[in-house]
Image (cartoon, rainbow over the protein chains, first blue to last red):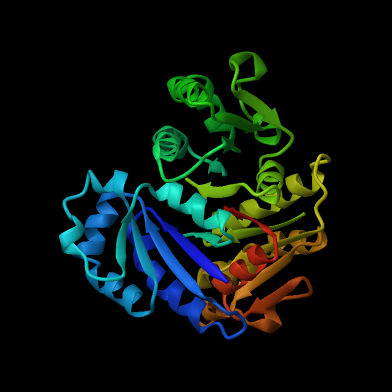
Length: 109
Length: 109
Length: 109
């Protein structure tokens, strides 16, 4: 199974760490992939700086953080501010659609 | 691919315009249909008046605005207050279930 | 069709009663099962006490209330505080993933 979390504010992004941990720690499930989509400029900036530890923790657990390129135009942070495990996608809503179309579960944080 | 946006407050409804534009402008996707479900009386009224431009923009992009008939009982606006591209559905939650059951992706704004 | 509602605050949990009623009352749909997932300690406590009537109404309509065991560790209420129609699941996010993987529609309240 595969799960994508949708986050649009910093609280939700911060919560994603515990949610991914709970998901991967749920022994009744069999999770192959996890992604966290971010579609607001302020949260992209937070993911690079104030919540950089959240981003690092998500990457360490194997989750991919997917940043909306439309939102990124309003953010200060850019590709150079992120390490492995973070990628820019053409649009957050397009990515959420694509993943669900491929069978991923969607959870709004 | 098909996507339904779920909106329950006026900010979310207003945001839907940019989200639908981003979705349709995402060249890596192939979007056949887009809908925006509204399930609160205050947002139905806003869709008719204060955010009428949002409603017009959604319709112009080809998105269908679907208003919950249960919520509409608490709204001032009625069928006569909307143009093409807007329809009343028996229930917002029923429509969201039906669309997902038919393979639509769901995005909560 | 089957629908799972995701609630993380008391307002959303309270709203679930009307939403489930609307869903089951929507004659254009054919709903086989409904669940309400709760993944916050404060909402688990509310479901046991302040919003006990909501919980009873959900159970009476045949919906299953599913409480996240991770969140429950931070709640005062435990298994003894709930009647039939309420169950603890290993994790809320795991349950939301499992249900969607089995074809359930997801609605965030």
